[in-house]
Structures are given as structure tokens and as C-alpha cells.
Length: 167
Image 1 (cartoon, rainbow, N blue to C red):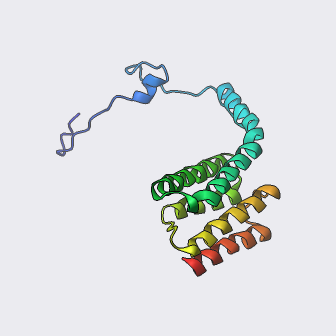
Image 2 (image 1 turned 30 degrees about the vertical axis):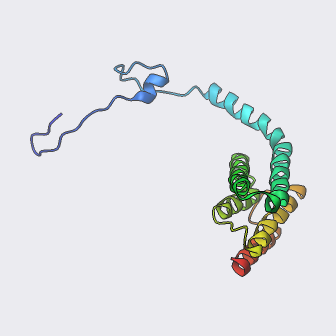
């Protein structure tokens, strides 16, 4: 459609989302998500939350195991191990975000980001990673969710001090 008052031309694009939702591209109908489908989806998510503790415990365990053995690996394996640590931390970040475990989310995100700059030749970096692992274990064992409590602030401060002192 071209406006007569200006040189602006408007193109109406095909709404691919409507097509995926099963609506005709030319129907002009507005899509509505069935509230029952939304409720069923939320129930599924809520049921999956029961899997949160064993899943996060397993991921923290994998990170710990890799971290304990990383220094004894050949250099090429170390690079792969650091990438694995990054991905495991990112998995924890995603899971914790889904279920509003904000404190664990904070630590997982911090560890994931730190994985991008870890220098295994610097012993100080080991202190920072270990600080992350320690507070993640405390957060998990104590079943802490909120990142706004006094205990959460204390744990966050431990990691902050380690980063400031040893970066």
C-alpha cells in the first residue's frame, strides 16, 4: 500500500506464526490460545519441577567431577572440559530460571560466564570456581530459592569476594 501523502510504502508480511498455529494465512482471524491448553502446559511444567532436585544435583556433581580432574588432563581435553563446564552451568541456569530458583540461577550464570575466561594456569581461578561450587552446594542442600534473603546475600558475597580478590 502506498500513501499518497508521502513516499512511505508499507508491506504486509505473511504471518508464519498463524500458519504454524493452523490458521489460514489469508483468514484475517485473530489467533486465540485455548486456556485449557495453557493450563495443561502449566501442569506439565509443575509436574516436571519434581525432577529439579535430582537433575540439579547430578549437574553439580558432573561439574565437580570434571573440575577435580581437569588439571590432570592434556591441554586439548582441558579445553573440551571447560566447554563442558560452560554447558553444564548453562543447563543449571536454564532449569533454575524455569522454576524460580533465583539464587542458584545467579550462581550458575556467574559460573557459566566465568568459564569463558578461566585460565587453568592461574591458581587463583581455581579458588573462584571452587567458591562457585561451594555456594551452589550450600544453596542446593539448604533448598534456598530466593536471592533476596540475608543468607543469599552472604553466599553471593562469598563469590563476589573471590572474584574481586582473585581475578
